Image (cartoon, rainbow, N blue to C red):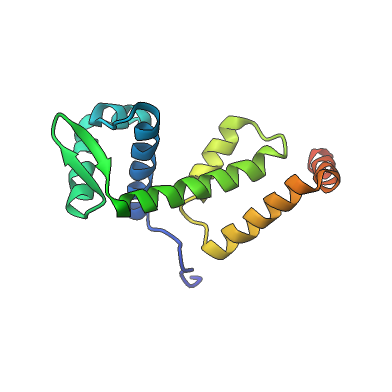
Length: 148
C-alpha cells in the first residue's frame, strides 16, 4: 500500500468539505444557508444534514441556530475557501480541453478532496501558463482532440 500523502483526505473529511463548500455557496447566493437548501444541493435527507450540521457546530466550523440557518466560523470559512479554490483551479484547467461540464463537475468533485497542495500548485501554474500562451493551449487542445 502506498504511503499516505499529506493533504489526502479521508471520506469523512471530504464530506465535511462538501458541506462547508455548499454552505459557502448558499450564503454567497442567498445570504443564508438553511438545512433544507443544503439537503437539496447535496441530494440527501434533511435529517442527515441536521446531524452533520450539529457535528460541524460542535467542531467549531459553523454556527447553527435551529430555524434560523447556518453560518461559517472563521475556520469553516477558511476550509470552504480552500475547497472552492481547488474546485476552481481544477475546473479551469479541464474546461480548456472541451470536456463537457457534467464530466468536469463529477471528476472535480472526486479530485478536489484528494489532491495534495504541491500537485494543486503545479496544476494552477500550468493553467495560468496555458491561459497566457494561447499558442501552447491550442497545440495541446489539438493533441487532446486527436484520435488515439
